[in-house]
Amino acid sequence: MARSAGQMTAVLDFSQHGQPGQDPCDPIEYLTAGWNMISFKSSNQSIATAINSIKANLISVWAFENQTKSWKAYSPTAPNWANDLKSMDTANPYWIEVNKDLAWAY
Image 1: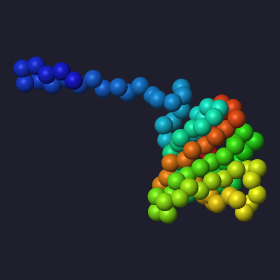
Image 2 (image 1 turned 90 degrees about the vertical axis):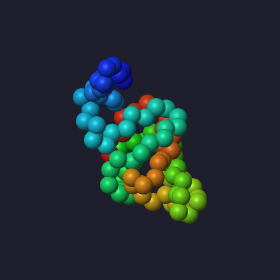
Image 3 (image 1 turned 60 degrees about the vertical axis):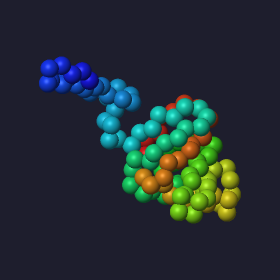
Image 4 (image 1 turned 135 degrees about the vertical axis):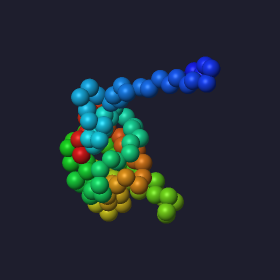
């Protein structure tokens, strides 16, 4: 931003972030192999529904719940009793580990 003689000039950036042609409101995450921190952009969904399209490449999902001050996790290879992350929502950030680069539409 520059000022001169009582005037102000601003540079506005309207470039699109993400992938070409992607609606910024679409719930799509571009994940890279390894760990990714994401914000879930959809309404509350069960973990099974949310991760269905990436289940074959998913290693685990972790979330820290501030209310309980505890970590919750889900892994498709873990037994049900060990998976205490039951749903995903917009309230928490999530750490997601995948085994390859992929686009996740939920």
